[in-house]
Length: 325
Image 1 (cartoon, rainbow, N blue to C red):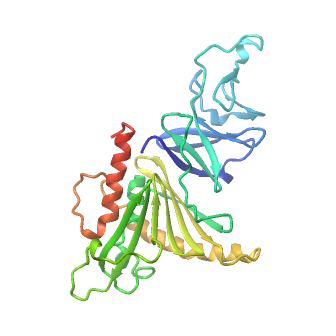
Image 2 (image 1 turned 90 degrees about the horizontal axis):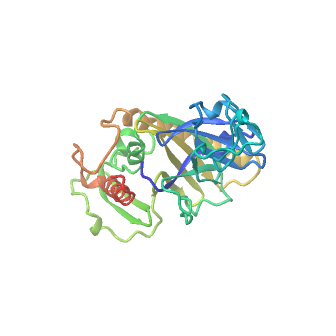
Image 3 (image 1 turned 180 degrees about the vertical axis):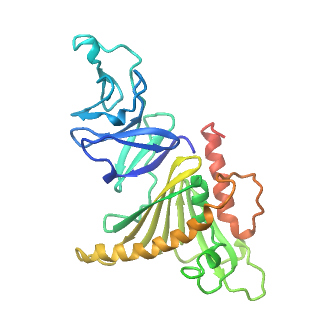
């Protein structure tokens, strides 16, 4: 995983008030809980006293209580109570739990995975998905590294084969370009697939400047959208569990229908077809080896793989900048 990034790790409704939640994310065992004001905290799921899972404990107001010996920790990870020492004794140093900077936005819980700092960057989302949109959501576990799952959604070559009965209908096997740009960790992809007429694929520099928004957008480290239209989006958050497992949060966003109740029905109907397409991808991607990708690996890429090549290169740049390459 790329350090020093905001990651969407859960949807907000997964963390209930008064109930600690244990999850594995980014290769770490974590516990998330809400205080008396409903603010969410994410910390390592490990009591520094005897190694018990804090997620098995209780939320007591603004503290999380360890189930083993009753140690209590606040939202900053500081131990505030050691019952065995009595309430008059100050808590010794060294009993803190590591806490991850956490924010809630767009009905997601985001954690900062990396070196703590005061000037944390904005959350990575898409500005054109605003409060006028409603969505239906679907969660799917894939037994691959999250880089494989991301690359699949940047892959324009696979469409007429993996999706020949859905979005790949028409036999458009030749890939002109594609056009790809990258700025401020935002990748834009314009797709120009066509039927094979015997001519060679056009190179990106031979394509006209696009007059339409990009079909695909990916924002590092782990969110993607398919701009189906001005009123419709497919959104994916690729949440790393560990090096071999990913949880995909898929949302079907729309703001064409705004009538209460009916707008949610439209979103649910749109989600059905999106699930079918996602499962077509999953059937193939989980067979890929190795499960994790890199810039240099035993693969033979073609011109149509330009989005994947750019993704891998920029991912390596971010890893090197964070000292993790």
